[in-house]
Image (cartoon, rainbow, N blue to C red):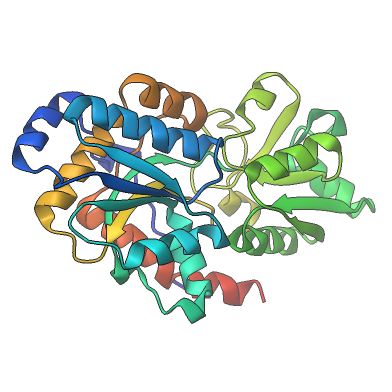
Length: 315
């Protein structure tokens, strides 16, 4: 079984804003850059993309025009991007899951990661298994004990991949979940806080609630501990050999020239640690993570190739 690709934070390439002047001298777009955003307007991912665009424009003078293309877990955005010019004038902000599990599941699309050029990631997920504090659960084992005592555990997820992981998580611990699929992490959080769900996957949106003592991170959905609650067990500790590691990532159409790819990667990465964009990313996602070049290619390809093993395991 192929393992999910893991990237150490120390191995990421993070570029300072001071590099932008040199970037602009080496390459610049011939006109406006269209930024396809695969997320609903007003959410954290959409906001981060627009703030990054503002930072890049302020530093380089490049005009960037955001455009929402949502739906199907990023597949609609990738479909729109695929046939756009590959000269650096069109990019998309998606999540790595879109180009991995979701693309593998969308067999009718005919697309693979080879149809796109990876540019750079911006931030990683802080995916937790989260419940309300008033359940009385302070650990994942508390929830397992409740399930074994006869409680119906309603588990909220916002993607097919997370539904598969939730199924395997229940199986590994000898319990069952009533898995409820909704659109977006905010819908999961709303369901948990309203009492319509008992627990759910949340990818950082739970931070304020956990700080306020209203929500509890029962487990990390990642291969590494959560920044906010490092003592919570990771999925491997709970018997699941998969994880929900993922990143927000910019991609372009296949065949983007290296000078355009590198200039865009450096400019976008620099913007993730400066100004309002950097501040928002640090607050919402724990800080910027910039993976690019061959390392990003490997990350996207592995996510796509390993998706089949997860799907099969969850059957």
